Length: 250
Ligand code: MF3
Ligand code: CO
Image (spheres, rainbow, N blue to C red):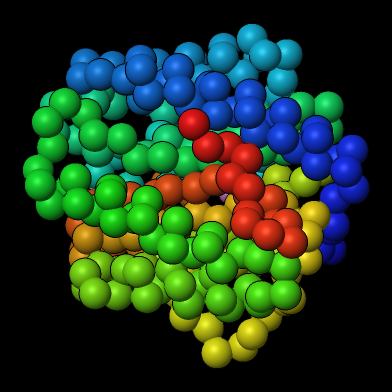
């Protein structure tokens, strides 16, 4: 899949797609509470997406069976929603979802605290979010991909957390996953030069312990190998000649 530069018209469609997705997340954040199942979150997410007249782009993607990935505690990403997985006070839950509006995809993720969480979990969530913001400062026309990757790595490295290496950010547009791939750890290779009109999903996935992950037998759920908890923060952004625009911000 090639790297694409969006036209002014396409950028408008991406903006709208991302705005609607941010609204879905705002509603999900308000709804989640202890006692809810991860399946309840998926049902609500799908309802909110379809309520905007949009299509959930994760549903049936390579056979993925839900609209929202719901990953709890040591689950890094791609948790499959289940009626018997109940959120408890003190858990952290990562929601990852996207939608298609008039052919244009959006993609975002957040990790939320359920009730009162440990200070260590709160810091993990906050620092993962901060690493995204440190990364996108570099997402300017004329910079290279490795400027983003290196900034995320530098943001996280003081804490000794594990930066997930097996999953990366990506271009996004008329497909959920376009080139380029965007690693969240330091690169020597400069990679692609950034141009105004590129839309990218930048998504650090950070483990409290080691970086290694493994896949469960459901073929989807990614968990940390050492059982440590993990956080995720993703936005779809637009590269411009000036400051980058965060299209899914709320
Ligand atoms: N949100 C993932 C990403 O950021 C994609 C999930 S695809 C699914 O790239 F099939 F798991 F839903
Ligand atoms: Co993504």
